Image (cartoon, rainbow, N blue to C red; front, side, top):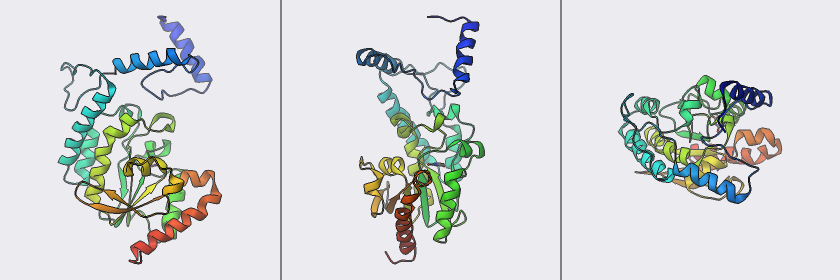
Amino acid sequence: MILNDRQALEILTWYHCAGVDEAVSDYSTDFFAKNEASTATAKAAKATPPVKAPLGHKPGAPARAPQASSVLEAGETANDARSLAQSAKTLDDLKAALERFDGCGLKATATNLVFGDGAADARIMFIGKAPGSDEDIQGLPFVGRSGQLLDKMLAAIGLNRQNAYIANVIPWRPPGNRTPTTHETAVCRPFIDRQIELVCPEVIVFLGGVSAKEMLGTATGIKRLRGKWTKFKGKDADYPALPTLHPAFLLRQPAQKRLAWNDLRMIRQFLDGKK
Ligand code: URA
């Protein structure tokens, strides 16, 4: 059905009154449709992925033809992202490269790039999932309610933003704080990998299941991963890594802070050379 301007405005106003104030995906999903119909919709969406400006695309130049599947497109964009990320020699270069990068749709809906915060030569790096709305507004990771709790957790073991480094797997806020899609994660991954290489910490702490599962390449849940030392395999080096509970989860379930405290003590012992 083609809507005229007045009808489109009425529908948008209706959505807005119902509390819908952002688009959470590139495609619309009919959650009432039966399986067959929704599969057909999903297939159609895959067959015609949105054309994204390829790297180095000049305004006015013809866009690259859409690929046959969005999976192929993600792979290609991730390769572009990898070359761009690897060419960065410093954290400032990497931040500038991300600012130029148009391969992730989240950039279009975000207010700011949320790159990282803390000491570039930190011994320890904390990696969360993705920025929320406070982070999106300020352009800094973990500055909202969960960030305030993270600051207290760091302080409890003698750490702060002058001696630790904080970043996220995804540097732009997913609308409505939804979990990033596999496509978004795949295209952003080379940047966080490079950020780790450039900070080159002695130890990495993954905050929450999304970060731990993506970075460690596992399907195991955070409750089983947390509190156990593991290795993050970088391109040229392995890094000791400890997954722990996400501060946002601890705000929802304060009784679990006891487990997080155990993990924090393990981190302190590691930094004190007692692991
Ligand atoms: N949650 C995250 O995972 N990262 C942030 O920066 C803020 C909240």
